Image 1 (cartoon, rainbow, N blue to C red):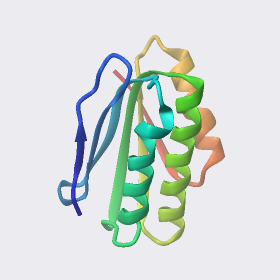
Image 2: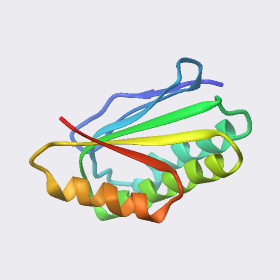
Image 3: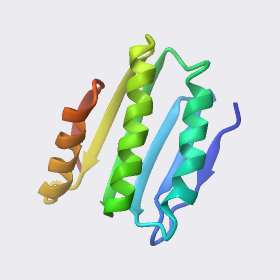
Length: 124
């Protein structure tokens, strides 16, 4: 399966979806002008990945900021990961946030309450 590597910009996060190296990460800021255009390829990739996933998938989220439109797409990613988890793959989410960013911790905790996937919280 072909990996996706997108360098982050001021408005879009860095993205790595690389099943052969078992690296799944979104980091940076997410406020793309067209949220669907940015996130649709990610959701399609996850859909394809779910047909033949790795035995374990640890998805790292290290977002500094995301807007409301991005929050819905992030939830959609979590729902795809939840489906993968329910299908028998071992899925975990590592939610990284700055130590002084209580809002990002709370956002991660809210997502953790919405989906049946193991969440780990890490400060940096």
